[in-house]
Amino acid sequence: MKILFVSAEVAPFSKAGGLADVAGSLPQALTSYVSSMHVITPLYGQIDRQLFSIIPAGINGEVVLDKEVIPYTIFHQANVNSKVQTWFIESEQFFTRPGIYTKPNGQGFDDNNLRYFFFQLVVLDLIERQLLSVDILHCNDHHTGLLPGLLKANGIKIRTIFTIHNFLYHGHFSVEESKILPKLLLSSLSMTQWNNYSALLEGIDHADAINTVSPGYAQALLLGENLDEHSHEHILSAQHKFSGIVNGIDTDYWNPETDTYTSVPFSLNKLDGKLRNKLELLQSNGLDVNMKAPLFGSISRLVENKGFPLIVDLLDDFVAKGAQFIFLGSGDEEIAKQLSKASQRHPGKIAFIDGFNEALAHLIEAGSDIFLMPSRFEPCGLNQLYSLRYGTIPIVHKTGGLSDTVQDWKTGQGTGFVFEPYKLEQLHKAMNRAFDVFKMKSEWTDLIRRAMSQDFSWDRSARHYIRIYKT
Ligand code: GLC
Image 1 (spheres, rainbow, N blue to C red):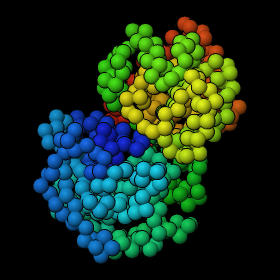
Image 2: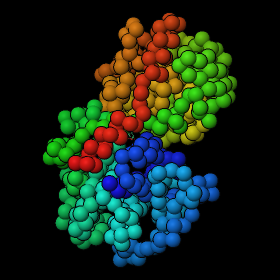
Image 3: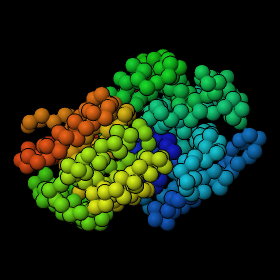
Image 4: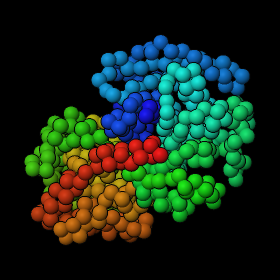
């Protein structure tokens, strides 16, 4: 089986969210089962070509978009020591600017639809020119949702799988914009109730197999939770080809024993290193050094559905009780403002770092006691998995992948604190429970040990993907 994995972001080259982590690690895990594994993604301006030895691959081409001929150049990594071959699409018009989806001020680029139409048409062009030999095209999220239909419309008999990482993002495009697309595709598009099109729903309609990133989220989508009626209909009519496969993590990159971003390694049997990471985390972020105070960590895009409206309302209360907090993330300006005000109200108790910083993300996982992840909904979630691996006890809302991967604490059992329904009072209770158990030294250490013994390596899920490929 020759697989081409298509993704708008791939770690470590480009990352806006969890999609990048999956695109960076799942193909790797699949290599032992397939004959070739290729990944293709845009060459964004901020990707460090030198660092990753990314060089031209000697392939050029052009696609027609809105009657305009737009050139592209294919790059690849020289001397890679990996079974995964990654291809990058360079385009001055669409990708060379800095930013993946957004301008520095956080606003989306105006031409995002065009950019990802172009991305998909280049992939189609490479396949048509037989420059990439492919049996199965593995598409991810709406940026790649038109590819299954494009292949079919062009009579190309490559099978497709479409993985939904988040149903929140549709990649809607207008009727006007659709005219840019190849004529052959147009008759297969299906209009939404808002009289536009959804690249996400197109992927669902036309792929041979679809899946989402946890059984719990698959179930929620089938039940129509948080879905408009129209989307729910699409999901239901695709039910026969739909499954939920929980994400794995890269257990080498996220390994407290060998983490290159943290200075003190630790493991199940050498837990004292975790405390030294906590000390470093507190000191390097202006937090008071109080090792007895539980430290709550959060690494998240600052968006409403990650639970921030609940969190910000509880901060004063928990600081009064003696807790400390560290937040890392960027996104919604209003949420950023609230977190920064909270940190000014409570200097030494709350730290907020606006932005993203991979090294700090690792240190937060390593040095925090408790990880806050009360998402209103969560397709899979990866940070709770990193947290478990680093013995940082997650507090999660019982939803999607969070409820599939964290078991609620009871004396001698469980790996975290799980609450429902999604209400302030319930999160408050869960944080209180965590606070209380944290004070019970041996119970807390047992909890850490159970968390760290969980296995979230890709292997089991990779085999599940292989079964779908084979089908
Ligand atoms: C998206 C989802 C997240 C998931 C990730 C990778 O970011 O929001 O829940 O873990 O994709 O599949």
